Length: 366
Image (cartoon, rainbow, N blue to C red; front, side, top):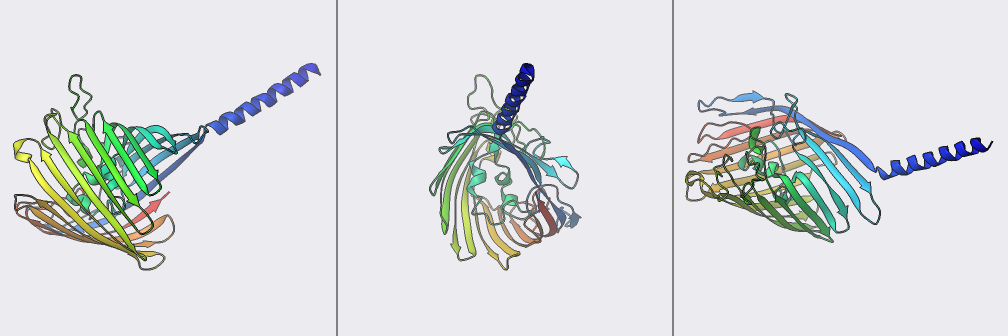
């Protein structure tokens, strides 16, 4: 009987310890977006031929799968992590330079003071347009005029973001902003972390924002340094690519009006030194509980140059449920001078040619 009582007590203690461990493990969730369709664009080459295709990079939103976890450590402090990979639904390939978790891969701590993150993460240029860009990373959007915006992420980064009442502040510092050497607009071949060169491939971003129920505004700053072999003409750590973004939105009942301006200065090899500004203005309105209409006009101006590009796009989304939607997009882009910017993300266009594009697609979120 004595040994039986000891064994019973041991089993009970083990069960209690297991319950405590399970509680301490916190929670992990799986989430994602699967989004694709069929797109048609005119003037896809210098001969003026059109193309019908299934896009690779995005439809209404880029496809992805992610894992998000949190552990409550008590006292208002939590451990967090995110692992998120991009997917090309048309082929099943991985995105962001063929990375397993190319969209985000970080671990950190979160509390009433905000959250601290270490790893590959979204930087402040990404967040600065989140509430003012009504089309987001749609196939026809300001992403076509500046492909960095939907890919504003930093490798090897320490990041912070905190919201206090209606004010949000954030910053990132990267020791080596991008290790990918191929794989679309996200790959710029600047791994950094070079002994003896503290500026090689460094990147600093910062954000100050204000939001309430009726309006909001944000200001962000982003500077990236180059190094030998880096893309975009940033072949030296003395070369820089700088963006300043001012954006905002205003609610008129259910109508949202939003816009912004992006000032960019590239100090690189002489042939790619550029100053440019990109402005955009859009609106979104729910026509019914299930039907939403978005529209936007944007323009990229390369200063001291004849190269200018204007893009107008609209999107109609029909929500079949909370997770599934059908959508159609229509856009027109006008290239002036020697500009050759395609209307669709990842697309092609003949130099100086204008383009019309349309897409129908389906999006499912889980």
